[in-house]
Length: 71
Image (cartoon, rainbow, N blue to C red):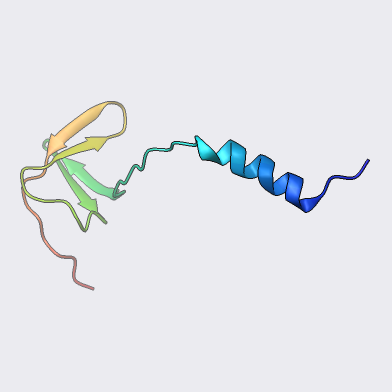
């Protein structure tokens, strides 16, 4: 039994026809310091003041100050 490339192509097209995937975009940063209820996070280039941030263990916080890292 031989399957042609045309048959394979048709099966793939049929399966992909109704494929629906939602796009999820997220910036991921690194927590570098925590103290007195303040977390210093590195790597969130698109975060804005007042934005709600999600941390591990169902913790969230509001972005207060945005500073550009200097190297």
